[in-house]
Length: 341
Image 1 (cartoon, rainbow, N blue to C red):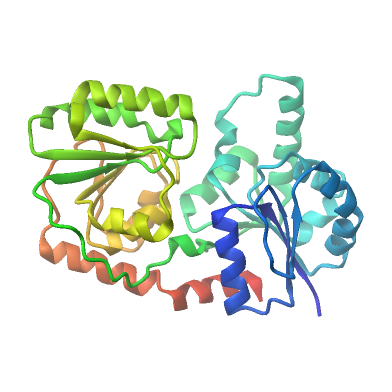
Image 2 (cartoon, helix red, strand yellow):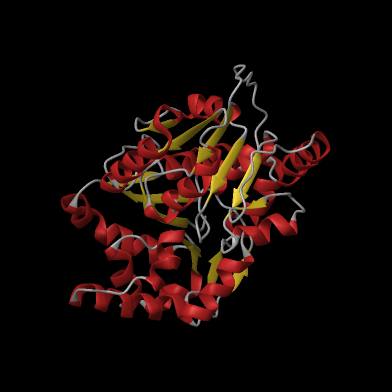
């Protein structure tokens, strides 16, 4: 049986993906090489926790890559991947780049060191030649062509279970305030402070602003918290601790409005979950996710003009039904089957 080799980094996204593949596809065909400290117990996962593990497995990895039918790269966010494909460019003919925001949008970052200049040179060469580009957003695919001269075929797929609609048995707590979620992490791409300044016109209203800051740049998280407290006092709530998935869903269920001011594709799982719960969602007009919303006729709003008005019931029901239909488990499996069977 031909193998499909997956290369990625351990973490909640990849762990849930491995589990989903194990439950819905032939796990004897899919093999994962995952770096990082998290440990998988699956027989088809090789954990590479450190340089010693990498040295031990590099020969087996290369043999598997040569024998494989397909190579799936879950984000080019590790240095070894650049060298692996640069010195073996023939592997790119059967490789699929699942486009993560960090690797696609690294184009906007100027390299400062000689090492980074070399990596960016290699990156440009790889992205131009890789055979398949996997992303659910046409906008990101177009950016890859524009920025890197990418010539690979576009496979439309959102790739990860976090982007699925699920039927949640959530009973939100009664609240008299208008609860606002701002962003999804402590990444500066959230552009929190721009939104906080805009929201000051509502600081005397009965609002609460919840800001997830448990992962990302913690120095930036402190700056956001400091500014939020300065502008809104106790109406600003920083979520600095990691929240387990089920509890996080309960948190989303208690929001009335969610604001994502990223200028790139980010937080898609959050956004789909919130729209599927009937929440009012704001996106930055520069985000390529706006194209997805238009494609599926989902009603979202522009962060340039934020109000406290909620969705009317008709639009809420329409959004929920669209998400149920287009982001169901069945449609997700069909989408993945384009390249994983």
